[in-house]
Image (cartoon, rainbow, N blue to C red; front, side, top):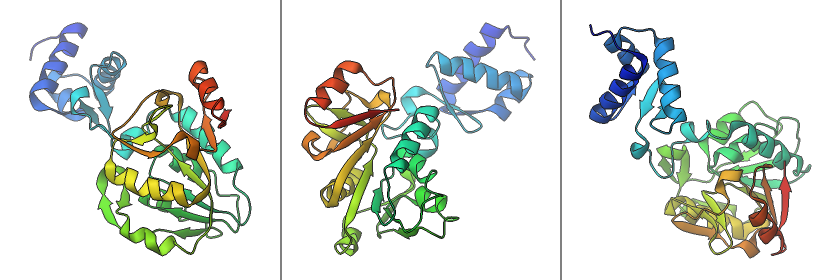
Length: 256
């Protein structure tokens, strides 16, 4: 077995990844005759340079990453910021509220902070949110029907939303691929955007929960204009100029 230097091994990992389209820590460990700990350090170093994207147990090339990202990968991005945003979003919910949580990883962060609440109805099309709330019997959880979308662990399709017509939704929490002055809230999936668009219209208060990387971006499909949004909750790294522009449109922006 060839004795690779650090630089040679990492270059060889990239070549292997380019050929195979996906690599695992276990396979690379056997291929190069080094420990899995060493391979994980290699992949992390390459990920820091944006040469690979880490996945559970391995890596894929940046070009293979789908535009909407899988839920598992999205949960690993901006983890601290999303947790702070989730905590702030949960603090807005009052006893007796009916709320909507979408399929975003930031909405899932809100669900993780709901355990202390009582007599709250949570409406969601996110399977991950439902699983998170399984151990919260004091919460009423409603999930409309639809088609399974595995990438986001969600049910999509607007047909099932008819069952919600008799529910008054006080607060809707919406993550987004991007928020811009011209396009408003956007998603990269038209199916997800179709569901969100209806839920924005049915929510008395629309709350966008987005981390600082989403400002100034626009996805494929808009689901809410800026005038539809009441509050934006984001982190302290949100671009100051865009924050002020959004505030000038009468939207309250809370930075956590």
